[in-house]
Length: 543
Image 1 (cartoon, rainbow, N blue to C red):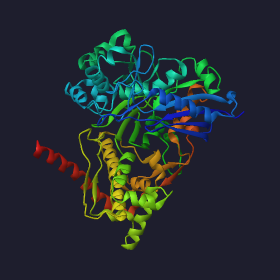
Image 2 (spheres, rainbow, N blue to C red):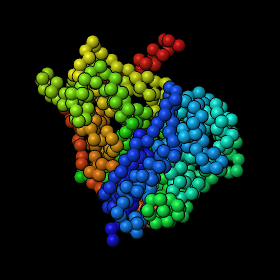
Image 3 (cartoon, rainbow, N blue to C red):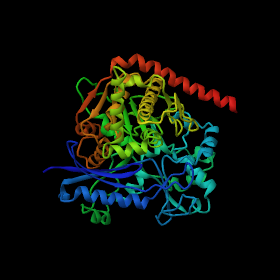
Image 4 (cartoon, rainbow, N blue to C red):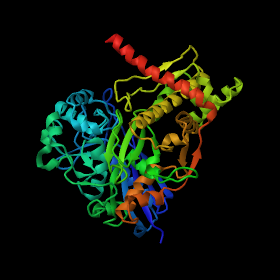
């Protein structure tokens, strides 16, 4: 009998589900777009009803015509967004609009900047595990914002707060258990190799959230489970009936979406590439990019989140770097350029990034250049248009472009686009060098997944700038694969999660760095770092 697992991934803009074989082959995929509201600058909100209904639609589509007996487990991942429910379990507004459908503060919401600053000023020891500074993208600053700004409307009426991945397993099973991944990485829950995990009561009391300590932290999680462990009694009767699946089908404890991508990536094998987990950097590239590195011991890295124990791979410590805007930045650069509208009309169904890559090849050929990389000698970008997550850890940093002219044609757009792709790659190098200085010396390859892995220019540039081989999985949907692995683990189909990762990870293609561009990128990387220094100097001059 063929055995399947279902993986469900909730990203920033869509819900996806996949039917996955026990060998890690994706058989069916379904996608549903989800709504995002932005009622004010830096406010981004979503609806838990919209997201769950989209999950149901996608799951039903991928299992249609499949014998429910062959579906052995389900796993969920999602963005690390904050869900608020009232005391009856209904959506509770987190929005200045008062609309209860707007009950999720999206991960990229930056409303809690003041609260993050206040928390960081207290210098709590727990902040060692988030690179020394709490990020305004994490949950405790957002919780504090809700208490300070929406006490009557939201805080006093809340029954449960969930990280979005845990909300999904609650909806599927009725269990209020939380994932160690979400709580350790985004909620300051502490897990150590040599002690029992737990909440820091003193931290919550110190920052002004002492009321969450009541009743053993029941509003934010009193039962915490490892990723992939079985949640409750599996699918509830009502959800199973809706989905057309067996009641009790095992549901795996969830992961954050990027961490599910890491789970799907780290087991991918390729010729000539070290298979040790600690030799690999996982790059999960979408709206933003996450940089995942694991180690056998805790490595504290300034400006990089973690180390988090057992947050992704059991028994290993995770460090998580990231860039707050990558895919979103490239879209912004392209769509705000004067040449975009005319060019988009002209190219029809051709993907705009593919067309720009073609323009770059033509330009390089016309100018007699060996590689397209060399087109950006006089154009440089600092990519923090939505602040810096790692390794500077400064959400107030701004983006910058050096080398603009009066040109506004598609060739100009193509060169600025290329310079932005390079800048994002220099950001990866900046994170890699910071990890290495702290002790992550074993990284010898980069594994990549997400929407941007479909862009050959992006992949090759990452390899060239880091001067490391890139492994591109043949099964492109590593995040969906990772969530399906959670379902397999909940069903006890493999002996443990590491065995599941390797058994379902599949094979990958190796993209080697182009040594002809090494010297060029070394020079541009120096300019990249100088642009950061210059921005800090400008700030000092003006303040």
